[in-house]
Image 1 (cartoon, rainbow, N blue to C red):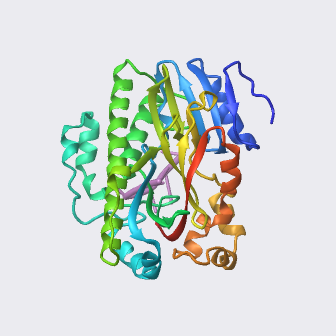
Image 2: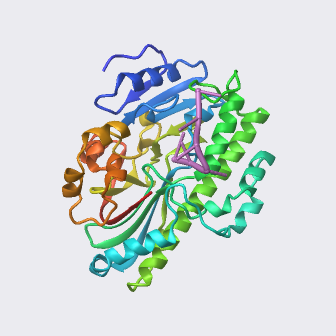
Length: 371
DNA sequence: ATGTAC
């Protein structure tokens, strides 16, 4: 890979990165407030900054470097359900889950209670947005790469894995602050940020924290609903004391840096994490190694091998069906862009980041829910 | 990514 035109220290953990993504990363590193950068093995181009990029600044927060789905991430809940019992009723669970969980653009008919929201700090702008149906979206999945997986590890432990984010709320918050940060008042490509000590910067960070809490509560609610549905058919429960939660779209102050992660998972030394592969190969439960050159991060998934349109054009439904043998899932033209073949090989991606995370368990899917 | 787009 070509060297980047910058004196800012950076490290690329991917074997080959498309030129468009490289240019985005390079231009982020060229910003005067940027101190360090890293590209994870799943990096590919996104808005303003590649997905799979981590960029650290001195006192500046850039909303476009967090992206639209603030707080998007994964929860993994180990359970005491029996693998064979779950497998026997997988078809029924699949149907019941789509009845109890809104997916795609759908939301709940009624609000999901979230009492803690009232005492969380938030700007008046966010309060107003949140008041307009925020709670109806708690416990809704969304679309794209968001999913719910029920799977089992090597010891036959059943896991509930949820990938979702802050839904319309985070999107509106991101758009608002990206518009505020950009000099021409339009949300667009560019590396426009706020000083963290100024009003806009403080408001953004406060609303970002709210969205992170909302996204976590959304994933918890989704996992609760999955647990409830399974327990109507099988004995057992989730071990909520061992719930793992990791964001991959966020900004935080750590190690004396303002670290932005856009499609990159926090991986401090000893920290539990979840890295999804694809709807056939499942997800990995990991433990972070706290690699400083990776800015204490890892990949957030396999990364796309094919763009969504390209996947829809070039992949066949027949091959998709064959590749999904043994997994109960939406296998149809509408989900072809999420077929395993649309993603990079997750095992290779895991191998490329053995200095960043250690694999604790491999959760292989029994069923998968997508929007 | 998004009760869907300059």
